[in-house]
Image 1 (cartoon, rainbow, N blue to C red):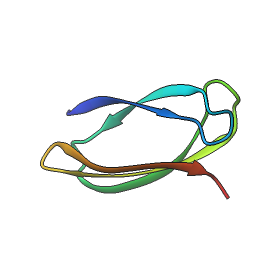
Image 2: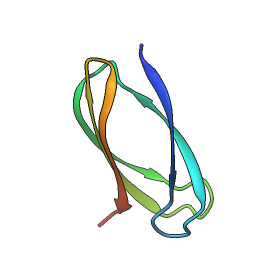
Image 3: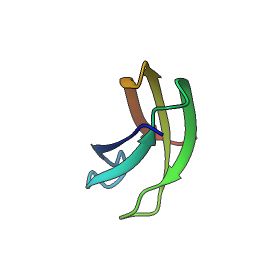
Length: 62
């Protein structure tokens, strides 16, 4: 399994948080994850290609 830690700012509280992303699945993944600081739902969308992160977006869900 190819995993990386991605650090980014929560779109709600603007605190820096991190998530572990599994790049082994490849293609585009999208899911909702709660912020570990303010607990608001964040829409996470990222694309992986050949074990590398190609794009990453964290935005307010809904």
